[in-house]
Amino acid sequence: MTPLATRSALAIAMLSPWTLLANATPIEVSSSFSGGIYDGGLTTPGFFNYYVGYSFPSSPPERRNFFIFDLSDIDTPVTGARIKLFLPGGPTLPSGYISSDPVEFYRVSGSAFPWTAYVEAFGGTATGPMLSAMFSTMGGSASAYGVVGISIDDSGTDIIIELGGSAIADINAALGSAFLVTGRLTDIHPGAPGMPPSELVFAYTDIPHPLMPLPRLELDIIPAPHSILPLLPLILAPRRRTR
Image (cartoon, rainbow, N blue to C red; front, side, top):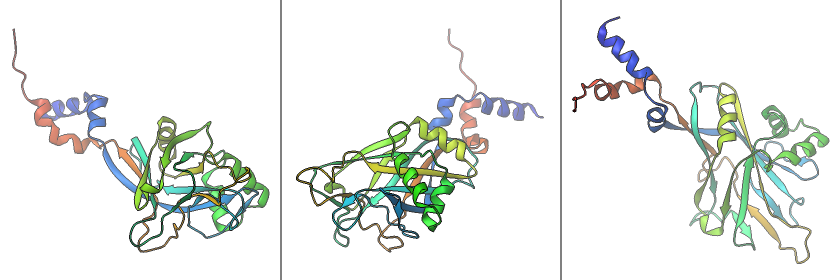
């Protein structure tokens, strides 16, 4: 190895974690599956709509949603991530926020069940008792990835949920496979006196639709060593001695 090559290799090896993080490259992965499971162990096979909450009397009491992202082509560590979910609205779509509450809080988490169980739910092969058990773990607080407040003013925009440390760890564990996200509204009250007609978010998210982007997982990827090479002239530049 030449002296310059040796210095280059050492320079890359000595880059601090902060330098790597500062140069992380974001990429987006669209969901392969999205859908929901109702309280009581019901689902709608093959239905990509990811509305969450309830709408009386057109649906069962509550629906929680899920998303599966294919990470089979990603093998580089992830340092940060966020979920992007489009909330319909604007001049061409009805608002996806249908609630008498000014704000609904939406929480995402993993699940005690693997992503393959949710593929079975989407395909209609999961049993009612299994669906009911899966529902109870969706959007859980113990393994929460993140939470965001949503209002009607957000209609027509992406709702962005920054994912926390437990999510980043689970994403890195899922590299080369698939990553599951489940969600729920945290404070709905369909059985309370004076029940409002709906507490629903992400309504009308019918996919495929020309105006509906897919749910997306944005990942911050640590750059490969070859992408650090443009920094080498700065790293290898002689330092002026000071007294």
